[in-house]
Image (cartoon, helix red, strand yellow):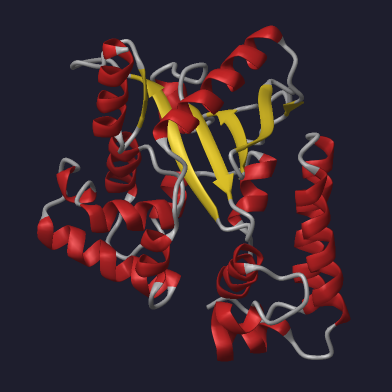
Length: 286
């Protein structure tokens, strides 16, 4: 658990999110949601961290203008002292450093996990740990996967795995459609660009960002800016999609060009290759 976090600090983080989203021409609905949440937290007479620690996400959701996603964001700030969403918006996320916070995961194992799974958050890693993908990473067997699951549970809190699995996700056809829109607009130069803080010594604005809404989902798309994507020269291929629903509960997917197998040369959603194969078969039959 992080040191004491004041209501003012939580409100400041939410306002920072709103400000960056506004600069990126994100949906005004999302910008205003962060601003309303900041106002709610700042106006409270009770320490929000007390509500989070005593009543969890469900208790935070009783506050005005705080849905499940924003409640989860507050809980993360109270637990860790920062908000990963703000790190992503600023381009400062380092997944491998994040994974090294898990007991027993060193630099080599963190690198192997990110290389194999293409996940950037602890929540996404926990899903992989429970659906069997983590145990197939080289160097990780069932026993080590169990240890990582336990470590994730201690960091994310009890019930996190169930909450993550309960969340619906957009279909692969929808994800691939957003990926296609992003790459086309990035290529045409019509998207706003941010200056990521990692792997960008000159502070150049080179990373295009797309905010769009489809089928009730809100999406943020951007090229991967991880060490692995730079190492393999895939910064213009791997696309990370962050999506959230009406409650601002976030999820993540990575879309890449497949390099082998029946989908070679096609765009696929990592971890959902079987669905992509079925979609490709359906399109071929049509």
